[in-house]
Image (cartoon, rainbow, N blue to C red; front, side, top):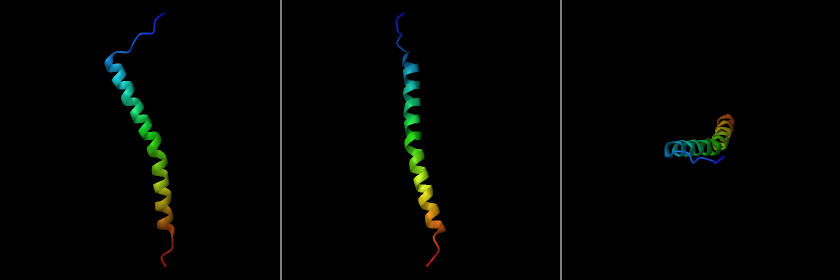
Length: 47
């Protein structure tokens, strides 16, 4: 059984999905880091 090549539309959809997944994978840790810093700054008592 031969492996069929996906149509251009399928390849484009897969590419978009991979890019979105990579963006989420990189954005979540950055967002958590920013949230942690913001909470630390907000919770710090004023001098």
